[in-house]
Amino acid sequence: MNDAAATPGHTPPAYLPSWPSSSEQPAGPRRDPAEEASGRPRRLQYPPAPEPLPVPVIDNHAHLDFRDGLVAVSTADHLDAAEALGVAGAVLVGYDVPSSEFCVGAAGEDARAKAAVALHPNDAPGLLAEGGYDQALARIAELSRDDQVVAVGETGLDYFRTGEWGRDHQRRSFYDHIALAVQAGTALQIHDRDAHADVVEVLTDAPQRPDSVVFHCFSGDADLARICNENGWYMSFAGTVTFKNSHQLREALAIADPQLILVETDSPFLTPHPYRGQPNAPYMIPQTMRVMAEVRQDRLEQLCQQVMLNTHQAYGQWL
Ligand SMILES: [Zn+2]
Ligand SMILES: [Zn+2]
Image 1: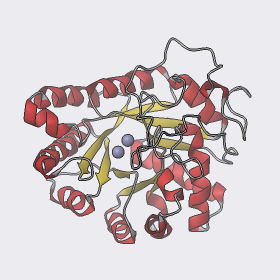
Image 2: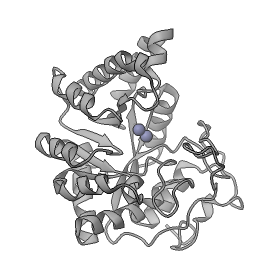
Image 3: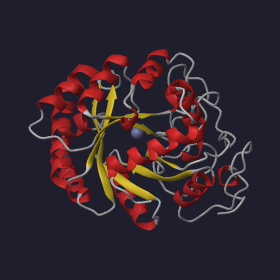
């Protein structure tokens, strides 16, 4: 680790166009350069590095194959910048077969990373309607047995992007992924967008559930947090918890069982305030952790320690 990785107040050098390009850059999809809601062009500069964390944590949900910004960044460069700021490692999360293969491969090459594999709830309906689902799920099942895989996900329900027509398909895929996580003995990472009640219903109804259930980018209110508390389901908070209008989310965080709190970036998405809309990366976790500690009125050190412990409980210890 050296100063080149990250200095607080400056964008880490690997995220600047002047950085020598690496041959290991992932060739994943590219994030839309326009704002999701308004269609306005986004700022494509990566934000300045926050102050480092006093105690390391792990980013339990990142898409490092997904390109954003003005330069492609290698997994090693992402993890170096993060490590310099107290983010010791990351769970790299797949959303289709190529990205899941990327995550398993990248985790195999870097001890700081582990992988999660799945077909995303926004992709499953198309595969089920047009064919190819069984073959894709079989490949995910195969990957889920790899030593580098600590979770099946992201799976779940998304009623925001997928319309009424895809709901039955999403439910079927969600049940299938729950079964895969049980078989592989891994955690389950859930994507829940505008579908809280139905996600809870499927989880409750499934014949078997994995020991660790994680709501990635937890987006519920205090009521959903209470349900998670009662069931021992992990709540992973992303940059959304720092957004000005996220009052209900902060209420949920404030009452969450401390043993069930995790942190993530969902990079390159959900960049914390005041950099909303710019590209995100695991090195930005300290920005979110500081807001989380404030909301809970916890000491930052103490919350970091707890989140690291929870991450090991949820996925097993690798760092
Ligand atoms: Zn998601
Ligand atoms: Zn994600």
